[in-house]
Image (cartoon, rainbow over all chains, first blue to last red; front, side, top):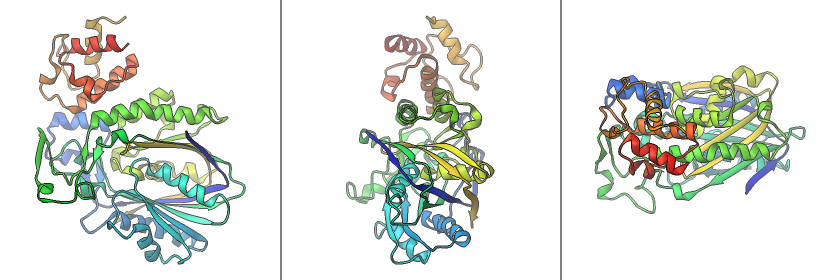
Length: 349
Length: 77
């Protein structure tokens, strides 16, 4: 069981970056009025940020990271990890490109992690494991996706769900920090629930990759587009997420009431409300950002922290439970204490 | 134990966009005007929250009417 504990790590700053351009659910051509009302009721999504063709997830993460560096400096940043499923290239790794772009020292280690909605929690576990010995002083965890690049406009089951965002989190070795507790899980039997079939080694691009298939009314996509099975994902989330969180909490000496905020991946409001009710926690403790940013994949947790908890995180200590879940299936949660975290939300042209 | 009529009325309350009396035990729910995958999510959430029963997409495919959903609920209970 991947229940693990790390020590001596603290988060110093989180900056999230979203594109300026807003797309409103009410402007989506494929929705009837009834579709729109039902969509907003179930997903909670009223608007999303969409990056232009020229802007990538790397650009959004760069802007977020640069903003952190301007404020905190880049001395002692010994690691840079990029968690995303929309890197700039097949190769080289985007983290290495970002090391150069941010003008970090060549002694800085850099690698990419290919995870989606669980990516922030997994990223924190990787960085915490690297830093906890004290040999490395600080790390930048860059997390996000440009999901809109892989959704078909003609697929109303996927296109209006996703928004783009990139985030940067500055972590440091802190001998006085309290331990962090993780519960990380995976189940590859769910690989088809969210998948882009063509474009990599299993199914390289071929003549059939660009053919638009009608899956059902209002759902047309190519094999290069993201395909999403909403019912299977919903079933997975209801079955696993609350269980994962409860298992984590039970493995510690903490009660649910002691936790100040539960930051759930912003998948869809119906899923998150179902999880919240299963956990029997009050609405106040579960902040949302999905209404204005949509599902921003791995960026959704840090983005919600920046958007909704700026003052709370800056002032005093907070005990947080973060839970990411989705594509893979991959999911995990972390229980951690924060102290005076600087957060900010910036926009990219 | 909830009756079929009570089950039907309770489920109907979940759908803001549905007029009172639209759902009947014999209603083939997929033929309701405007029915979409979003409605299916609401059905799954309804069964999970009220009866602690988790349906998969495949489970749902086996059903046609509200009565079928009710029977599936009883079967899985």
